[in-house]
Amino acid sequence: MKQGVQLTDCKLLELFTNGNDAAFAEIYNRYWKKLIALSYSYTKDKFLAEEIVQEVFVSLWNRRGVVKIETLSSYLATAIKFSVFKNIYTKNRHERLLEQMPASSIAELPEDLVHAKFLEEYVNGLVEQLPEKCRLVYKYSRQKGLSPQEIAEEMNIAKKTVEAHLTKALKMLRLNLKEMMVLIIVLKLR
Image (cartoon, rainbow, N blue to C red; front, side, top):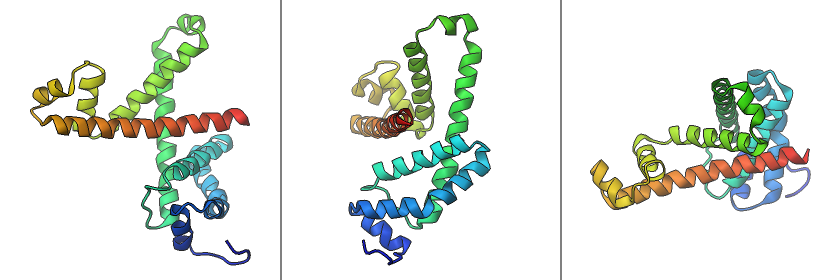
């Protein structure tokens, strides 16, 4: 990209979706301060606001080949709001989980088990966000251990439809878990 030339958001998006790393850097430099201010206005926590902005940019980077954006500023603002609400939801789930567990049992659990329980709760929260039929298919498959054929019979739908719902659910879970892992790695490097 040429120095001194201010590209439009549309041109930056076009370059970014075609794999131009410099375009991503320009998007980041152009919007990060505004996004931190927006995130901070919701969270009132500077560190959390920075984490959320980082999460949004990691997600944008990971989805660069598939994301369809009409207006960059609106997309980023909406992504910040969604991430703030997702963070609040996750925090509330963690607090409810801790309230349900006796304090003595938390102290006795190895740290890995506590993280595993939080991860399980996070995945359960993601599953609850799936569309209804997709969620049901996933639960029948993973929680009840039914085969695609058994699920098809149970729900009175085609086996191919079951497979499509499972693929969609697993893809969404993988994407969200990948984003979470990248964020954890970034935070551990600080």
